[in-house]
Image 1: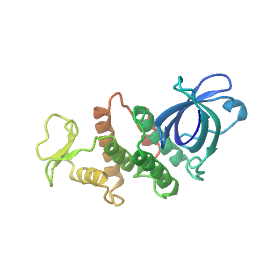
Image 2: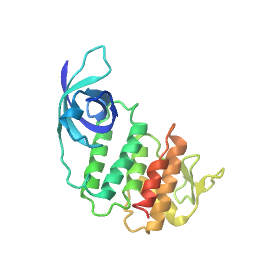
Image 3: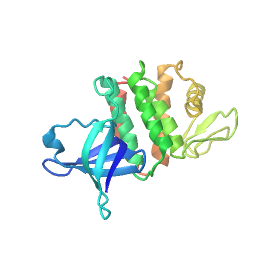
Image 4: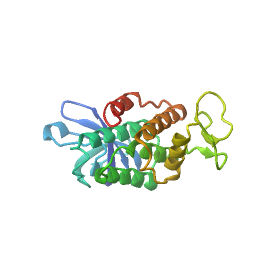
Length: 231
């Protein structure tokens, strides 16, 4: 059956000398995989997290669609040319490819990722982008922390809550970092926080994600961010 889809390219894998397997998060079907035959010979550029219109054929007995044509649905000018933005696309893709495989169709999630890419393309300051993206994406996955008390004095990473009574050893009590983290989850303005607070905030968010998301790790990506954007 021939079909068309709008999809965000999550990652790609070698299939043969001339062909690749492409994994997308699509608007109508959620996570979906396709074979693109001859793509290497065609020399077609495949941008990670690129937004594409896909025409494909899929046999009922197969899990893989066969791409017939694939065209850009949006052509950004900065995402794949400015080094910091390229690195943040890699950060987003690393988060998505570890978490989105089990996601069915969710137009709100698709539109969120698309909006974040447009935001990254157009923003002039990239410093706060990783914390903004990761905090809000965790909410989409159902891992938003609880607000146990209105004026909580700690963020309990293990229990996933802002509280006055943290337990265990994994919690944050630094007032500025705490305020910053709350603002991230509540989608409040965070542009005026010191860079050191933003750095610490991202470390906490990554620890939180790695603790609660199965088999999730951003070790390599975080090393790159520390050496570049947060150097």
